[in-house]
Length: 333
Image (cartoon, rainbow, N blue to C red; front, side, top):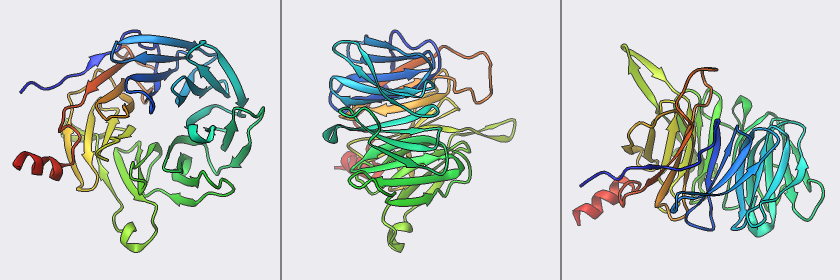
């Protein structure tokens, strides 16, 4: 059986790709934000650029707010609404420093922005200003929202968890078990916890339930490492993405590799062939049938020559993301 391979999207950004996000509303729409000061909307089935939104400065994150609009934020400190129908960009408001991470709750008409200014801000399109500003202990590096839980990864290994139904105080204030700077944080689809990754080639799975039984399930593992000249080289794990159906997850590192992991059984399911450059961001579509991979230099090593920034779409085979035990049982039946 021939391995299913990926294909490259046309009209890729011309500078570092900061984020790729599949739509939770449609199967084939993908957003990409970039240091080239654009947000791009693709139809990955047609391999076509549908819209391009120009910004004043580098864009660090983007998220869908509905089937017809999205939100962006970046170095210019603004939180913007992007209209797919008209192509218009409208500023919702502003932080005091760069906007690093965005999440939206369409059912509540609410947007959450995390910034290097050490605040979390909550926005409602119908209001001229942020409806809530929460002070945080450190700069925001990554955020995710699922099952009413908003998780925020910050500098100095801080993690805050909010219940978006009550934003007065964090629901949990935590410190990750990882010992080095966090790069990415993503919620488990079943709502039980989250995965986070660090610059030191490790991924941790952590659980919200603080009972001893549940906390005994948390663990961290080494990943994205290579032996070069008899020495282990450790690479940052820049990107995480959970499969929406199977609950397994993908990780992408500065080693140009994407791996699929079964967190429950603590096993790697598979590793895909190396991509041309570091993995900057990952996203599964809502059916879990496609994985978007941003192959883009993240400037870990400062200015240097690197391959062109690219976005690849990998169609997922039936067993590519199934947990090992489930896949084995299916094959044996």
